[in-house]
Length: 59
Image (cartoon, rainbow, N blue to C red; front, side, top):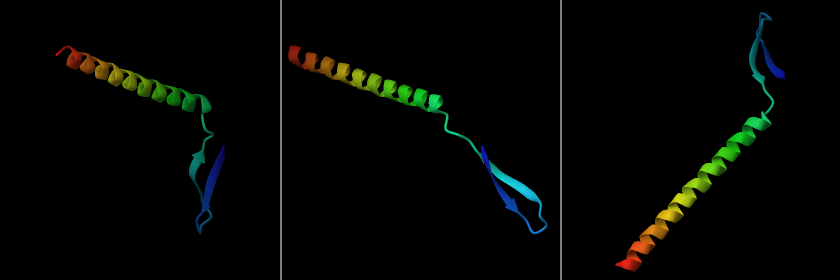
């Protein structure tokens, strides 16, 4: 981890923040969840479209 240091005139060191490495596993889980929800939404929309199409065909 790297830190960003800033010096004041009186030479007190204050730490601005700590940079963290990217958590690849967490990122991968988030991307998988996003793709899963997109596919689910797409499948529901397609099923609804087919149901409407069937109703129009019977009428």
